[in-house]
Length: 144
Length: 144
DNA sequence: TAATATTAAATTGTATAAAATTTAATATTA
DNA sequence: TAATATTAAATTTTATACAATTTAATATTA
Image (cartoon, rainbow over the protein chains, first blue to last red):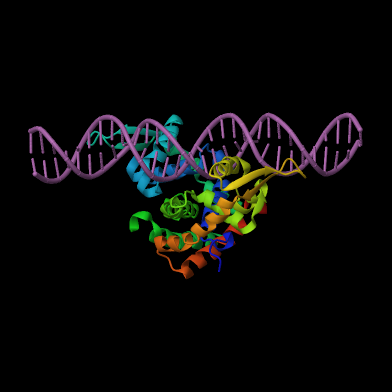
């Protein structure tokens, strides 16, 4: 077996699928003026109301080099507030504004629209999620 | 079920895994001075010797906005040649230089190093590849 | 407690990605 | 065949990603 052939690569399908899925999200998220990474940040904030930059990075596996400009864009859209912690001034806490919190109502329909765009069943999407999560947990860089 | 919860997302694990896998490739590909997308281009050229920009884009699901600067970098490294087709001057053909072709020998060890870095078995990587490929084929944007 | 180490963000530099537009070339059709 | 449409790359713009460095703040230790 030629392990340098594209069709034998295990990483390429993941890399390609990631971009295909993001492309499916694009027209849906355009409706609420979010990019896919911005949507992910909003998802974790709708769940947790307030998180530090570091905590968001741990949940999404993104570092400050990616998050700082992205969070400044969300701040520019008045969806979040960036407030430096008083207990530890190294920490910047991210919280939802009223506009940011209320955007969740508009986003309620996103998962269903996405599912329709993909054309997969709920079961297929669930098993994709579960099987990739198993691989993800085992291969996270800090697991070593 | 709250479909806006991060843990219920099907796309996020794919997006995160793609970046985790690329991070595993990084120290390995540093040894042959390639980024992961550059490595993918070299893979398809090692298989096909000569392809147009469009054909590379079809294989890797990338457009000219991504490929043109990437290919110019590979040209700068003397790994490929970019030659405009004489039959159809809209087309730019990409071919391997001798250096580019011989880089394949150095790259032979990449798949094994990657497998060790990941810590998955060949069977696990194979089933990951196969299951994602099925989803990928069904969700490619142009399939609609 | 002064010196050192560590930590959290921000910054800088490099490299993708993709949408939209432009340019040049080729194909089609009225 | 002249006008129109299509195609392939390149370009421009916007938005990630991430390594490496810097800065400021906090924690640790000699």
